[in-house]
Image (cartoon, rainbow over the protein chains, first blue to last red):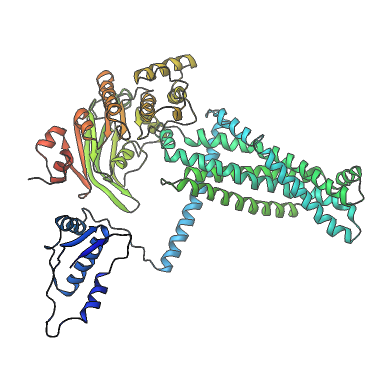
Length: 362
Length: 263
């Protein structure tokens, strides 16, 4: 017998629990149950909770070979039960996810290989496009180029200034602490000069731009992929790399070294402030020390690195953007992986460059 | 007459599009197989089918964005996929595509969007290009919107602007991906009018992917039905004919917009 209100807000009984509770109360000798029927005359308001209860009952009856008699239920409920039981129009088969660990390893290796192949192909396509630009067979979209130049000049200056200044300060502190112990405080200027020019200027600018511009490229091109703007270039027989990737790459290619020179300068100023404040050094002594120690090749090494970093950021950002999938989260994933890939490759490239510089005694 | 010059002028006997025994795959999954059909010159040909039946995928194959897993697609009698880049470019120049959401280049104004194909493929000077752009935008009812960016206009206007870009180079074949999707009935029927006018004025061959019945009955000379269960085409003919003599239950249900099968 169904009575009272059946609403989702309140806890409703489970069918099997109800049966277990009542089985003890069977009158002796009443025999096994053959049919479950309902009396709904006392039923109040009801919603999906009653349907769920009835579906549980139906499944319970089916499992035990007992007839489920719905005739006592209101017509709407009978109709809804029939709808809920209906077979779906089309059964969608989902690919079997249960694969062995060895197979997973194989899949991972294959996708890593595919990714490297895609990266090589993309780099080749960009190089090819650049070659055609040199042969004047590609018309560069100057507007995109200038947008990149602008966003990486006035747009990036505040953050580059702050980070480079602080990095200069950190190197100087390190120098003050370590070198003063040996009475060699004067040589702080050497450390700041070498540190900023050879390593930190290019590295920090690269990391900032990978997070700023690399992610921006990936998100921008990723959205264009989703709105089919990139396909629209392809079906016109126009290379999207010529139109979209090349101006962005060139913009970074120009701006990375300039920003690095700026970061070097700001970092050295930061280091000088610390040295002058904490040690008995005058700015002239600091600069004098710097100029005796540091050579042009130190500065050029940093600038050469920054050009490579610029190419890495541009390639990673544009490639991830062009490879964006078609769902809503795809653009976010592309931007994230552009940053991760950019920073990782920058640090790897920096290590390789330092190693080469050590070998060549630069 | 050589084959090349015939292809150049697009007036040869070969149908503009011919598909032979095409199989389309998505990763390792067969989407559709054994597709064979021809699109006649100046015809409005509709590819119809339920959601997920591979209509848009077929369109992507026809415009060269995807390669057939099996079979060939001939554009003006030439195997498009196997051709060299120059031939492919020449073929692409003669196609126009209207994407589902327009796919206008968001960084360019409407005029620049329409001008880009002209700059890429013609040697016209800036003044002449400006005249062509003004004409094309006027044809789709967007005179005076030259300097607007795509984000600043409505969805219907965006589609019409994209149509202006698609017809910039006076293509022989125009492809439409779900032209009425996302449009109100009036804008959708205005786009249908434009499609019919383009065919009447320029003799353009038009291939439309659609599941909008009103539009299908209005514009299609012939329609192809992709059956998702059978994984192949199950009907090809004029929509009215297919509705009156449906070759299968699924075609009947689709064309009569009914969830019940044949009586």
